[in-house]
Structures are given as structure tokens and as C-alpha cells.
Amino acid sequence: MSASSREPEPADLPSKVIRASFATEQAVYGVILVSGMIVVAGMHRATSLQVLLTVVVTVLVFWIAHVYAGPVAHHGLYEHRERSSGR
Image 1 (cartoon, rainbow, N blue to C red):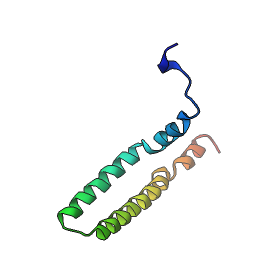
Image 2: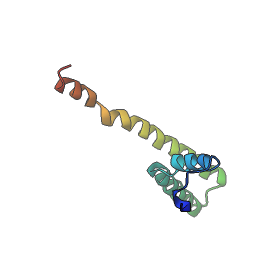
Image 3: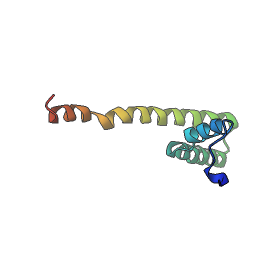
Image 4: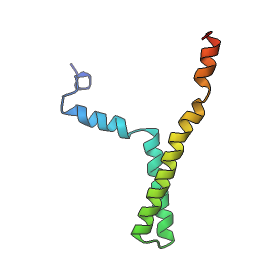
């Protein structure tokens, strides 16, 4: 039996859960966004506190937009399915 086909050890599971949670498209976009913000803020000679506040506010705005976009994108989707199925 090869090492690649073995069952994961119980100790491997937490790292797999963490990787699955943080290795997402959203995480990659977030890293790129925050990295770019830090670079731009550094070019404008912002203090560490200013950079932190800018990052926190921007991430909060993007999170709110993400939460809002889900319902807007799915608005009426289930209503249409119910009508087409005769409910």
C-alpha cells in the first residue's frame, strides 16, 4: 500500500479542516485586497494605526457587500421555481 493511499491520521484532520476553511477563493481575494491596501497606505506614509483602521473598515464594507449580495442575487429564484412546479 502506498503512502498516498493511506487513511488520514486523526492528527491530520484539524489541519485539513483549517485548510478547507481558509483556502477558498474569498480568502485569496482578501489577501490580495489587504496586501494592496497596506502597500498603498505605506506609499502615502500612513501610520500603522491608519493602515489598521483602513483595512478594518474596508474589510467590513466588503463583508457587508458580500452578505447583501447573496440575498439580492437569489431574490425571486425560489419564487420562480415554486410557480413553475405548480405550488
